[in-house]
Picture 1 (cartoon, one colour):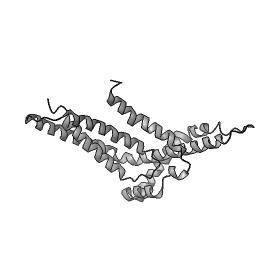
Picture 2: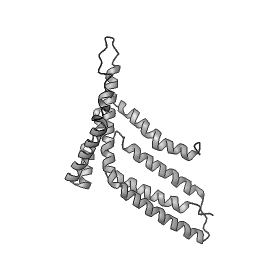
Picture 3: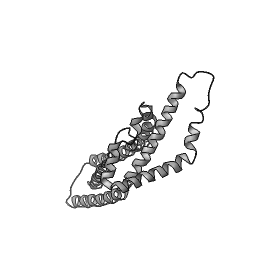
Length: 205
């Protein structure tokens, strides 16, 4: 089971891709790639209103401070680069310091985006459950009518669902502006794929 293609794709989209993105993206030289730009903030405000958008930002600030600032994680990460050396490092310390700064900026933005995306979580779960149920009903209707479906449909839906979840996880770390409406698109994709997954499951029994 651990060597199956499905498990390999599960690791690729939900573990390897986000980790690689979190590791490689901070190499980008410009700080603006890791800031929450005005367009992204405006999209959140347009959906939730100014007061709610400010509350989301405050919650993200509080979580970041509790998890990384108050815990001392940020201070410890800079402890080594703060020590002066008599031997020139050829600028390595500066590069490492910039990478760390971008990493923490990236993590803060990921927490902010996750806080915003959390408003879609229960809706996405309910929508996916409803679509799974509707797909299962469609499957029984086809089975009763001696309908035959290729298992390719189930295979594609299962892997498509993995891709959708993996892209959603990686979107938290993307060094690009991400409008809040993207989470509505992600919810719709998960629901549609869940329907195809249930509708194609053992239809040809």
